[in-house]
Amino acid sequence: MKTQQAIRNIALYQWQQILRIRQLWLMLLVLPLTLSFFVCYIYQQNYLRKMPIVVVDMDNSHTSHLVVRYLDTHRYLHIIKTLQSVPEARCYLQTRKANALILIPPHFEKDLKSSKQPTVKAYSYGANLVVSRELQKAVSEIVLTVNAKLNFSRLAAWKNNWENQKHDFPPLRLETHNLYNPYFNYQWFVPPGIIIAIWQLLLVLSVAIIWSMDFEQNKWQNVLNLANRRISLVWIGRLIPFFVIFVIQWLALIYIVFPIFGIPLLGALWQGLLLWMLFVVLVYNYGSTISVLSKDSLFSVTVCSLTLAGAFAFSGYSYPIWEIPLIPRLFAFIMPTTHYLPCFQSFYMQGNSLSGNLTSWAHLIIYTIVMAIVTFPAWLHLAKRAKQS
Image (cartoon, rainbow, N blue to C red; front, side):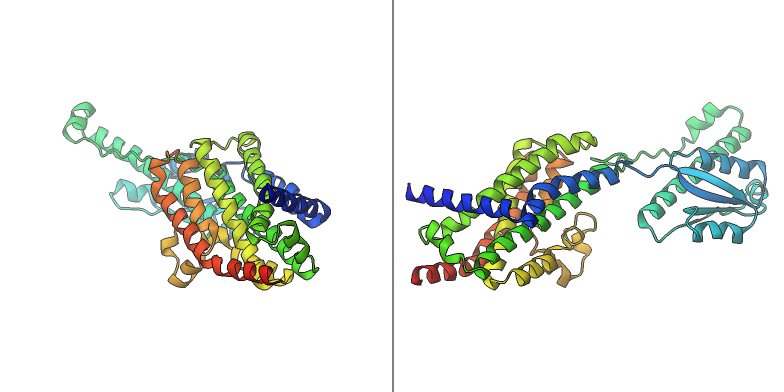
C-alpha cells in the first residue's frame, strides 16, 4: 500500500505541475492535436493537381497540337499559356507563375514522318523536388501515350488487317502497381510521420522541463519524500500523467483527426496502441535521463532539442536510412522515432499483423533494452545519492 500511495502522490504532484505551468499544459494538452490538425489540413489536397505549365510550340503542326492537347487534358497538368518564344516562357518559370516549360521543336511532325526521332524537352522547376518529380512523371506519361498512338497508326497503315498483325506481333504491355499507397497520396504518407516527430519533441521537452525544475528550485527532496525516497517510484509516478495524456491524444488522432481527413488505419488498433505506449515510455526515459544528468533546465531542453529536432529527417521515413552516411546514421539510431516509425508504418499503411511485423518490433525491442542498459547507471547513481541524503 505504501508503494501505491507513493506512486499516487507523485502522479498527483506531477498533474499539479502540468496544470500550474502554462508552457507545460500548452505543450501537452493543446499543441499536440492542434498541430496535428493543421499538418493534416496542409496536405488535404492529397496529391498535386493541375500544376501550371507553359508550352512553346515551335512546330505548330497537327502532331504538335495533339501533344499539347494531351498535356492539357492530363489530370496533373494545366497549360496556362502557349508561346512561341523560349525566353518569354523562361520568365514564367523564374517568376513561379509556371512549374514547367514544355518545348516542342521545329520540324517535329516532319521528323516523325521521316522516321527520325524528335525530342520533346521538359524543363521543370527543380528547386521543389516533389513538384519536379510529379511533372516529369506526368510528361513521361504523355510522351508514352503519344508514342503508342503514333505506333498504332503506323502499324494499321502498314497492314489493314490489324487483328492478324496484333496476333503475329503482340505489343508490349506494362502494368505497374504501387502497393499500400496506390495513388501517391501525400495525405496518407507525410502527416503521420511529421505528427509523430512533433509529438516526440513536445513530450521530451515537457519531461526535461519538469525534471530539471525540481533540481533548480530545490524541490527535489520534497519529491523524494513523497515517494519514500525511492527513485523508481518517482520515475513511475511521473510517467503516469504523460502516459495517460499521450495515449488519449493518440486515440483522438486515430478516431477523430485521421477520419476527418480520410487517412486510413489498416492495421489492428491494439497493435498500434501497444506500440505507441512503448514509444511514450522510451521518449519519457530519454528526456528524464538527460535532465537527471544535467540538472539544468536550459541545458536539458537544449540537448533534447538538438538531438531530436531532426528526427523526421533522420528517421528513414522520407529518405532511406541506408543511404545516410555512417556518422549521421549512428546519430539517428539514438532517436526513438528511428526505431518506432518503421513499426508504425508497417501496421498503419501496410496493415501487417504482429507476426508480419516481427522484424520491426525486434529492432524496437533491442533499442529499448540498449537504452535501458545505457541509462541505468545514471538512475543508479541518483538512487544512491537519495539514500545517502
